Length: 378
Ligand code: PLP
Image (cartoon, rainbow, N blue to C red):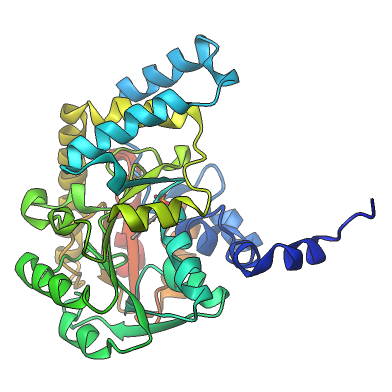
């Protein structure tokens, strides 16, 4: 049989696969944007304090680590993790107050964003999203023929829901709200968001990305998972990468209508590894660890905010494990001077080119970052 070149194989398998390859589906947006050039690789090299990818070094929970060790030691890695995956879906469904049919698992919530993007992008749809913002979904749509429609954040770094609503038209297939937002860390008003979803979901899928919501105040009053039902076009995306500290294990999920969940599963979802699945199950049962992690993040974040106030640097009001502040000088200058101090800050977020995003790390890492900031921002 003649061998197929990579190019002709991609061509033969159609736009969907080609789109996924183009958009690099094995990386989430944080990794892809930061890790693929020699400079970026140097920036995330061992020895640097890496506060650039919104990782949470306080996790995973000891219960999750023990569950993975038990799973591996008992020889279960030779088996497909069907039973454990079923248990995880049941647990998630109970937590979210929906039937299991509403749940779709992904290799990180990034896989869900990417698959939604490919699904609607192939049909030449448009996604309305906040700028600056997290671009994995818009990029996936654009890669296969869809269009991104950026809407600037308001002056407080929050989604401008009125401006987003005004952009919805016949070609809109997705409206993407990240709550709390990345890179600003801000939340949207809970009542306004619910009203917005009720109205906008009549015209398009409203995808609310709650990747960081467990870190915010008043989770219960802010989550919009209660608006998911069989008729409404809403998807809430969640991840185990943030509060659960499992970014390296690559697992997340979506909560949506059973019919849309089935559409997404047809794009070959949920090919998860056994250790990830058992770690997620154990994490969901360890509420105390989540509460402790949140407290550690908030305590450490306050030290950074105090420093920024002392240095007279404005920042956006954060509800996340990262802070977005006005450095008062070009991002590139701050990036390279912080690198010289051994600390990696996040990439730039145009058009806010004098603003810098810094993730909360371990206490000793944060202390090093604060000492570096004192030098760089003085
Ligand atoms: N959504 C937002 C807003 C994020 O910032 C991230 C990662 O940084 C993700 C989704 C995807 O994370 P993961 O693929 O690790 O679940």
